[in-house]
Every structure is written in structure tokens, then in C-alpha cells.
Image (tube, rainbow over all chains, first blue to last red; front, side, top):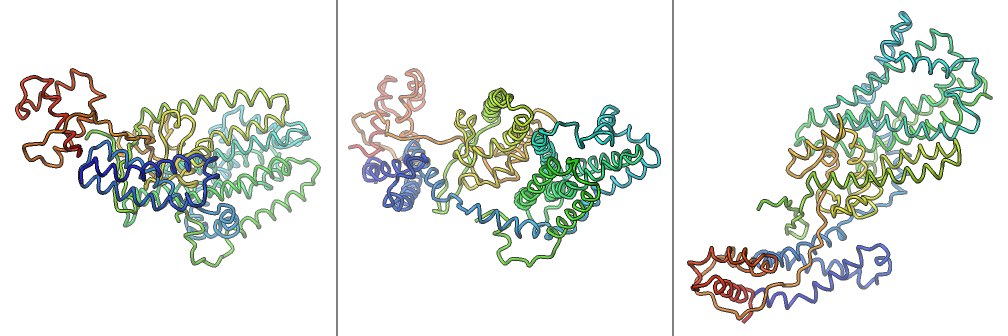
Length: 335
Length: 227
């Protein structure tokens, strides 16, 4: 069959299909489409695919092939869109998926915890022995500003603030802390080096500051302040680092897969961890802004509640959970 | 061909062509988005400023959301294109050509941090240069492609001429080339048309260039099936 005849035979079908696509691709028009038309879409699509195959086989003019190719691509994007019920998946993820993901990579979780707290603890010890050491890590003016934050003479904690600025700090914590988490994660793709750097650096920083606070005897304000949100925030940093290391490690040791495939697989896993980390960061920012900074509560209340938070977070993450049969489907991505 | 085409096999057993978007067009799209974000910050900051510290808190949250999730939001809900990409006519799709999913888009945009390292997206640009599909690190991990949006529509542009039968046997490829030339003619300058057709001078039994052009057009019409 010559091209002219072929076009003549199918032109009407192509035109109809193109019209359906034009309607479907605009959200407002899509909702008004008739059910009959929607049902015809797959049939039309198969028809176009068939035509494209024939046109290629018979080497019809490249313009015609390009035209059919475009129609197939547009149809392909509609027919094979991945649908999922996001709300159900979010709830399932918080209830089971996230802890299960941590437990899948439990040894990595402990390793990352060690990488974060280990250098921190050493730095804490060293700074206790030699108080000057803090200045080798933290610039002087930052030390001064941190001291002024936790000075027991101050009526407010955390940052110098008026009573109506809790919300301001909430916003600040979200922007700042989750940003740190994201960076800790993302730079892990550089063969885990970025994640390791951020984990160790933040660990050292936190260890040095803690020791310095003890040295200048501001413990009565500092520790009650940090214990409240620390369980959420520090754990979230560890999990971000864990996700980053997963990414980088897939490049170092891809196993039986090609590096690129191993990376894609690791990214799917890691992004699940990051969803959970963001959740923890949000809770941390909330607690830090509205609870930790409160001056009406006694120190004992803060220590008690802070300890309860730690127990809750660890229990939530580490309490053994039954593996689900379709665990990949609920926690992973592809359907 | 030298085109940056990428082939995707669809479940119907055929391959389709997607033209990949290169670093330049993607950088331009990024710059447009960057300017849009700056504009938004500017306007919102002016409005929220009257709300004092509470407004400043809102601004922080908004900066956070826009910096990290502005591309995610548009890529998923707006057919793979942020406003900048839309203006440049490019879009993000999954490796298999389907519209980009939430998690893929989140992965590729969170990993921007790594692509920015150490400055000015250097890592990302190098990665695009060495990768055959112009992928930056985020694209590699998320399994996404950035493509030119195809809007091509065909209307059979071959100029009419009296069809003339071909006297020799031609391979399918040669037939296709003649047909393609006929359809592309309207895009070429007169001089270029004649120049191209002169390449076939030995085969076309005509003395003038114009005559050869007319002859070739007749052959193309014949190949297309006009009688």
C-alpha cells in the first residue's frame, strides 16, 4: 500500500485520537470528557501504535513517522500514568512502612548512629579536659552568641526572643534544620563522603558545644532545652545520613547490578527514609519552638517529658514489626 | 543522525523517539525558574512584612518549601514542567517515558544539593556532559529524563506535481530520502534545493537544475502513491 492510500485510510482515526489527546491533556477539559470517549482512548492508542509500526516498516516519509511517533508518545504518557492512592500510602507508611524500612537496614542504622555520636562523644571528652578546644571548631562570635542564648540569667531560652516569636522560630527551624537533613542526604551520592562529612561535623559540633556549656556551668538551661526535641532532631539527622550512605554505598558496592541500576534501587529505598526523616524534623521544629523554649515549665518536667520522647521515638522505630507480604509495594515506589 | 534522540520501547512492541534536552536549554530553564522564585520572595516578603515576627516565620517556611519543592510541585502536577521548563519547551519524564512520579521528582530535586557541589552546579553539568542521556546525578538516581516536548503535527506537505514512474529500482531507504526531500522543500531556500538536487544530476535525465527539481518532485509524488 502506498503512503497516500495509507494516510487516506487512517487520517480520520488519527485526527480523532489527536482531539482526544488535546482534550485529555488539559485538566479542565479532561474532567468534562464523556465516558465513551475515555473508553475509546486505549483502542485508538493501539491503533496508532499499529500504524506507526507499519509506517516504519514500509519506510513511509519521515514526517509521517514523526507525526505518528508524537501521537504515540502523548498517548503513552496518558495510558501508562502511574496512579496511586497517596493518602492511604502516607498513613500506612507512618504506621508501619517507615519503622520497617529502618529495621531492614538495622546494622546501617547503628553504624550511622555510631558515626554521628562517636566523634561527638570524643569531642565532648576532649573539650571537657581542654576547654580551649572549642575555639578550634567554633568561631568565637558563635560561641559568644550560644553562651548568651543559654545564660541562666536570661528569661527566655534557645534564642533571644519575645513571646510572640515562637512561630518565627518554628519557621526558622524548619528552613534550617530540614535543610541540613537534606544536604546530609543528598551529598551522600558522592560515594557516601558528603553524608559522612555532615554527620561527623555535626557530631563534633554538638559534642563541643555540650562540653562548653558544662564548662561554663549553663547546664540548667541547655540540657532541659535540647532534650525535648533532641530525640526527634538527632534521630532525623542520623536517618538522613543513613539514607545518604545507602545512596553512595550502592555506587561503591553495587553487587550483581550495574551501578546505575543499583543507584536507582537505592534511591527508592533512601527516599522512603527521607520522608520519615522529614516527619521527625517537623515534629522536632514544633517541639523546639513551642515546648523546649517555654520558661513556665520546671526543669524536672522537661527532663521527664524529654526522656519519654526518647523512649517513644526509639520504641516506634525499633519495636520489631511483622514483615508485610507486599512490603516492597507499600514502602517502595513502583506499581 | 546527529540528533540527540533517545529510543523508548513501549509495551505495544514499538519504539518511539524522544528528543533529549541538553545542558544549555536546561540551564536557561533553571534561570527562568530562579528569577520567578526571586520575584515571589520579593512580593511575599513585602506583604508578610506587616505581620512582624509571625510573618517572618511564614517567610522562612515559604522559603524552605519553594527552595526544595517548587520544582517537585510543578513537575508532578504540570506535566513534568516547571514554568521555566514550560517556556523552554522541555519536560521531565520517567525513564520509560511515562509522566514523572512524586517520589522520582522528589529524589531528583533533593539531589540538586549534590549536583550543585562545589558551586554553580558544576557536578551536575559535568555529569550531563559525560552522560549519553544528559542526566545529572539527580536524574541518574531517580531514573528520569528531560526531553523536548513534542508537538509535531503532520499535514502532508509534499507539493503536488504530475507523478512520474521511476525507471530504476530503489531501496526503501532511497525512496524514503526522495520523499523526505519533497516534503522538506518548503523549508529550504531555492539555492539549497538546486544544490541538493544537483547531487543527483547523473541519475536524473534533465539538462537544467530546475528541470531536475521538477523531475524529482514528480518521482516523490509517485512514491507517495499519487497517480
